[in-house]
Amino acid sequence: MPIDTLIFDLDGTLIDSIHGIAASLNAALAEVGRPAVGLDAVKIMIGEGGRKTVALGLDATGGSNGIDIEAVFRSWTRAYIDVEVAKTEAYPGVISTLELLAAQGFRLGLCTNKTRHVAIPILEAAGLARFFGSAVVTPEDTPYPKPDGRHILATIDVVGGERSRSVYIGDSEIDHAAARDAGVPMILVSYGYPRGRLDDMKADAMIDDFAALPMTLVRLG
Image (tube, rainbow, N blue to C red; front, side, top):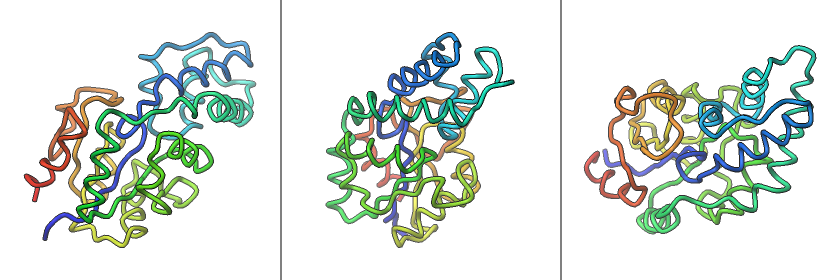
């Protein structure tokens, strides 16, 4: 059956968020007397939600013993929302391509490990909220966040799609694992924040430019 449902990851797939995440993480770490971490280090801390990013940031700068991780997470969230969200931009070609796909009748859903109160302002700031509406599924909406495939399946349900007619688009090993667990094909974007070699993920297709997505979908059929 033809593909009619597209489920997207957010960070590293639709938006280039690494600089904002790093700046706000370093602001939160500074509040507890920790040194800053560099962009390359932050890239491998992204993908499993803000709490995990904060925990990994603490681990990389001395550990979390005696540290209130929730307090640091709240500091990171405040710094991110207050300063960095407004700077968030979609990758080149994302908005025009989503406009095309929506006009073609595809169901569009967003499956992110970002918390809702961070994800929604980011979507609005980046001009992406109109494509997804209520079809944004965060860890607050499911007890099974990525890499559990049920996160993707929950998003497919929200948009009224079927697994057999769905494709997941993401950038990382976490996304790949979730797609495989969900039993849906995955299109890997090469410009995001993978932790290892792209070829090792063996995605069903890989694109270097988001604007290549429509033709890739035609090939996957």
